[in-house]
Length: 405
Image (cartoon, rainbow, N blue to C red; front, side, top):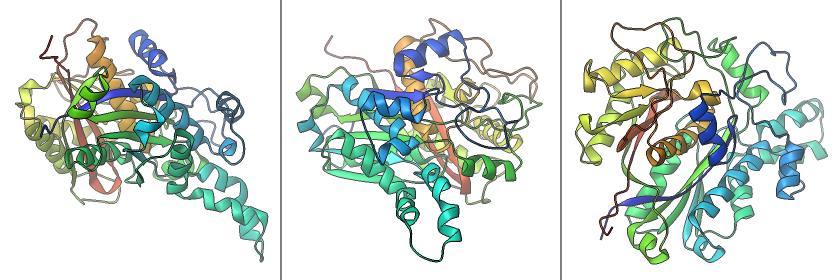
C-alpha cells in the first residue's frame, strides 16, 4: 500500500482576499493586507491587524446563512474556505461520507462570547445570554463548519495554539496513512477578537507598526484572522477519482520542547527537531529544501530562536526563507493552513514570496527573501508553525511529478 499523501484541493480567506486566486495575486504584487482595525470595537486602535475585509453580514449573505452562524466569524470564514477547498478538489456529498473533517482553532466562538459574557456575569440567574456561551467551544465551531459542508465519517478539532491548523493537517495525513479514511479536509479557522488583542497586548508583543519579521529592529506581532483548508487524499482515492494532484505532503513532524509557557529555548530545540524529523520522513537531504516558509512572527524571541534552529541544520548555507505574516498578520490557530496554501501556490507557480518590512540583518550574511522570486523552480518547501508551550510543527510540501506523463 502506498503511504503517499496528496493535496488535491485548497481554499483560503485572509486579509489578502477571498480565495486562492486573490491570495496569489496579492503575494505576487507584494501587497500586504495589514491595516487599521475596522471590525472589532476596541480601544486599542493603535495596533494594525490583518482583518478579512468582509463583515459578518456580507459573509452571511454570500453563504445564505442565519443564526447562529451569522454571529460567528470563525465559522463564516471557515465555511467559505472549506467550500473552496471542496470545489477545488471536485468533492461530492458522497465523497464526504468516507472523509474526515479536522479543524484547528483556539478562539472558536469567542467573538460571540464577548457580546454576552458581561450580562451573564452580572446576572444571578440563567438568561438567554447564558445559552449563547455554548458557542464559545472550539468543537462547536468545527461542527457548524462541517454541517455546512455535508456528512463526514469523522469530525474533530485540534487546539494547540498557533500550531493548531498544522496539527490538523498532520492528523489528517496520519488517518490516511493508517487507512482510517481516504480523504481528509484539514486546516483551521480563527477570527480576530478582543480576547486575542488584549491577551497578546498583555504579553507586550504587539507591534504598533507593520511587523518586520527577521529584522534586527523587530518589535512584535501584527495579529490577523482567516481560514484555510487543504484536501488530503490517498493515492488510491486520487487515482480512483481522477483528480488533479496539486502537491505531495511528503514529510511532517510535531515536537514539544516544553521550555516555557510562551517562549522558545535559545537554541530552538523544538523547532530544530520538527524540521529535522520532517526532512527525515520525506527522505530528503536538508539541501533538497528550496524554501522555508518560516513561522517568523516578528517577536524578538521567535525570530532569533527559529533562525538558531535553522542554522543548526544548514549552518550559514540557509535555503531561501521568508515569513508571510507581514502579508496576512499572525492568524494564530489558522496560520499553519493559511501558510500551507501559500506554500502550495508557490510550488504550483514557481515563485517565492518576499519578507515584507525587512531592512536590517539580525546576523551578518543572513537575510530573508527581500524581493519576490519569480520563475524560481521550487521542489520542496518547509512550512513552520510553532505554538505556545513549545508545540512545534513542520510540514514539507513537494512538487508532484506525474510518472505517467
